[in-house]
Length: 212
Image 1 (tube, rainbow, N blue to C red):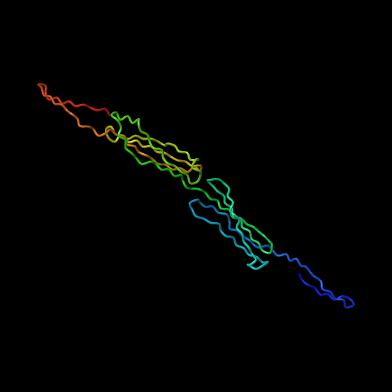
Image 2: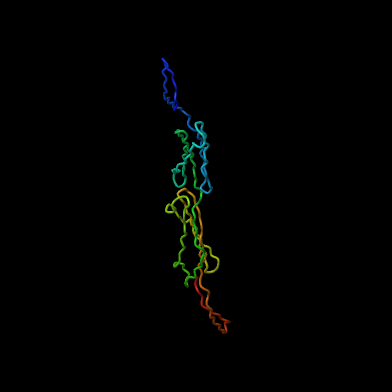
């Protein structure tokens, strides 16, 4: 507000109020460009640059609003809105960070084990232990666990090693695998009683046998 003193005719004088509305330019707010990162890499939003012609830096305010997240568990779009205010003039700018989850699921198999089976070593009274799985990118209930293969290797008479491999797949298509081996064997043999008989035909040795 300005006061204007005016002298009129016949020496009349007066003081008038003069209101001037100054139009100042808004502040200049510049956000950094959008960027893409992976979920395994630490990251932060880049603070924008801001300047103003209308007032001093004491009257310039910069506010960061809470980030907004969109997308899905595989690719998230996280946006940060900044607002600068000076002399009642307000401007905003936004930076968006695309976060791509690249971490595979976690699958942990139980340690290998040995099964001592019965006389016939049929192997029907044992089973593999299911693995434990969890997901980093997506909820664990979205994981799909499948058996890739099961192999059998004979390493000794009446002793087989069974190996099963599982694979876990998350909602982003990332995979991880693990295996468990089970050795199935007969118990240690008991002492064998042999009989020896000698006659005119020669020496005869007899002993019982045990099927595998």
